[in-house]
Length: 346
Picture 1 (tube, one colour):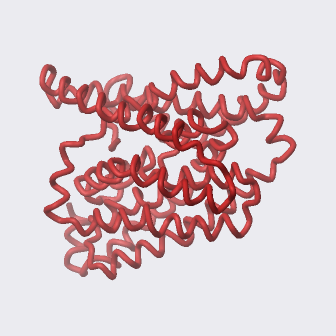
Picture 2 (cartoon, one colour):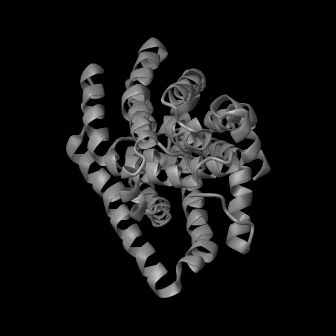
């Protein structure tokens, strides 16, 4: 959660994996898919075992992420609520509307549609704050917005998914979903906050940031890559028969980001946000937390529902990097000439 310093073994590994995350994700997908085709009977005979193993890795993916999430920043949102409010509108109002229109247009498989809605309701990619830092955006706004949005996910997500289930005549296992939200989000959030406070109290905040934070990020990313492998390992034969799912996901991701990024940028400008505040919420609002979505899908639904979350990073990262490369032009769009010069000289 943030820009990782290139110090220490864990920090260097994390920096390397984040830099080449798209490559490692594709490798996990390719290896899982090929092994799934080669060992299909192993999958059939040991489905329950692989699900239990996945549950363990789900915990090790989410819990470290929550340690890195600073919930003590939440009260600061009241001081300047505009960016936070806009991020909530983007994530829980506009994104579901855009998603519904796009899914209705060309996604026919109900499980894939449900998986798309699931991942689109969980904002904040693993690198959202990192992109904010690289673009000279407000890290403070990004951190607070991420915490506020995450705090509302357990309430908003079951409600919207229930509506989606009704629209698609899909039964949403609300009891299993609520248990999953408790296990995957609320409990790790609570334990993560306790762990964070304990480390700061006994080891100091500097040690948390320099030594422990890169290690926690490393555990999260390795666990996520393993779960991506499991998804494609368990569903390789189905993907081979219905490969058009991936084509549909590529079209959906491209259309969503082409619509959402310019729209949210224009709305932030109309709301008179500064360049730094805009960059503090744009990556959070358009980038999705695929790891958390995968965890919920694997525990409450099926691996097929997790496919959109597993494949979205392949397309999402391209648009994030393109937007990052436009940061100088965007700075001029949001700032006066004087402010733009001052930011570039910082």
